[in-house]
Image (cartoon, rainbow, N blue to C red; front, side):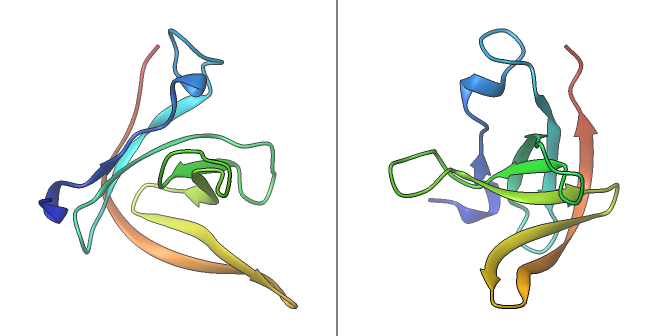
Length: 98
């Protein structure tokens, strides 16, 4: 696999035409040039779901986060002190139009 072109799609359940329409857009992670889609999340602190894989029995397929114009704050774990958050530098952030 060419990891310079890796992309993670959001599931159809959040798409405009077949889902609830909560899909927002996509961005490129700057260091590795991976593409991620993101959708709405029901959290004030982390209002986005960043789709990092496919939903399965052992994983929901997304990470909570906050996507801005040039950075994304992504919840990658939780410990006794709260959420563990990574700051990703991003580029080519764009919002989809329904």
